[in-house]
Picture 1 (tube, rainbow, N blue to C red):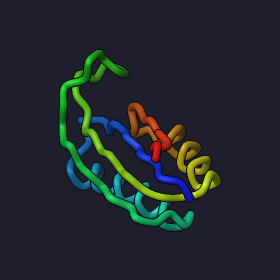
Picture 2 (picture 1 turned 90 degrees about the vertical axis):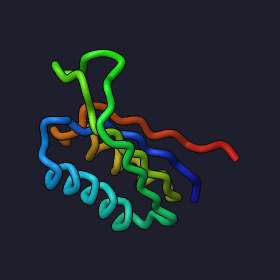
Picture 3 (picture 1 turned 90 degrees about the horizontal axis):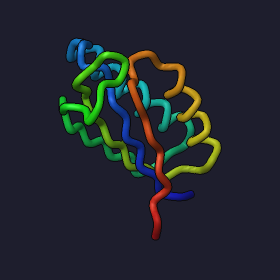
Picture 4 (picture 1 turned 45 degrees about the vertical axis):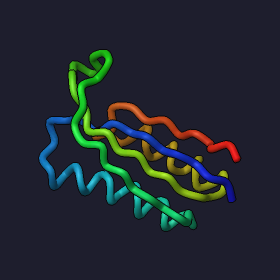
Length: 95
């Protein structure tokens, strides 16, 4: 198992309930794939450096976790097809 950091930006026009549901969706996906030490850090709404899909702001979320490569591949697949997510990045942490 390796340590990873996931950062994703959720559309700012969603209400608080849908934003929390999106975060919970990825948290439960990680748990179902066998990830451990899951830590969710909600940064909140921030201004984007440049417009993404005509949005000037986004709700930033950072999740640190430990998992295998298969879980990261599945997470990447689901992030790509989720309409609520503007951008995402998964980084393997160095030891």
